Length: 402
Image 1 (tube, rainbow, N blue to C red):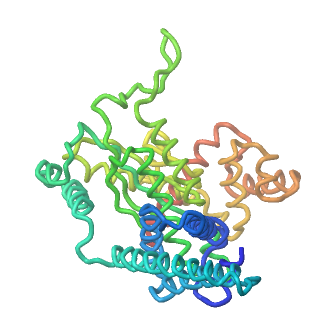
Image 2: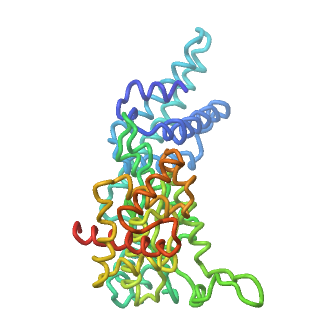
Image 3: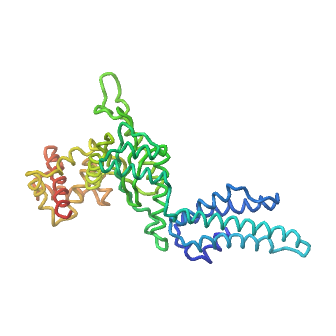
């Protein structure tokens, strides 16, 4: 695309955008502008207003990503300049009248595009912000503070639900954030925008959120009886019932991660509005435990990490449990092997594949672990003690470094 090539050549700041943005959104926007210009040339009519609404929205995104306004405006000038050069490259003397018409259309489109782009850029930097968005943030603040939230909800045009699902998210980096030549802040903001948009889509814009590119908190309204204590368990009368809102929320987190292009790990808890502070604290603890024990990306509740959660709570036994693995401290590969072996369901081939080892090497290390600690991962009676010791060691290390 000649327009994008000219933009990269003459506006250096655009070279630091993620490749997916250059080949995706930026290319699509450029093609749309060219089609709008071609339509104006064919009909002699200016482009419809929605074309410049799109220009305004794109400029707001560029402002959010930190691109300077002069670069954004120059991009529109360059685009139409390339179109003009293409149209006039083989013009003849008798084309003068048509070229005057084309020049008028180009200037008209440039005026409208730069006006819309400037307005869109200022939309992002306007101090007043969105009153509705500010009201929703005020409601979130009240809920997290444990304050009465009815008035804040009314100001936001919302009704407090019977309960909220409180999600505490940890969002990994997108590969573009570490790609040489790409501006990390731009990649991070684009990742956050996609994540937020997907969460809004799946929650029908009902969620309250405070998110950064590395994670944050999301409150999703749910009904009063959507997650009973027995949800998800089979009964004598048939298969397990639907586990309330959790399958949908797990799918929402997975979809948000795909949209963001980065793994998302989430701790979750549910509570009535007045109990949101406690639920947020629990969701964070669940996230912390899931992260410490290498749980896979996705949504995790207390029920998913019950043993690890309990074993990481302070007690007289915790330090002594942690000490069971002290003989492995100097052999870092042994402790890594043990953790991987447990996480993989005690499957030696899975452990070998994950650690890029020969299965015989895994067997040797497991025998070495048993000799040093007296705990044999191949003996079912020792597996629970090993699991408890790993949990306790993780908690002890966190307590001493936190």
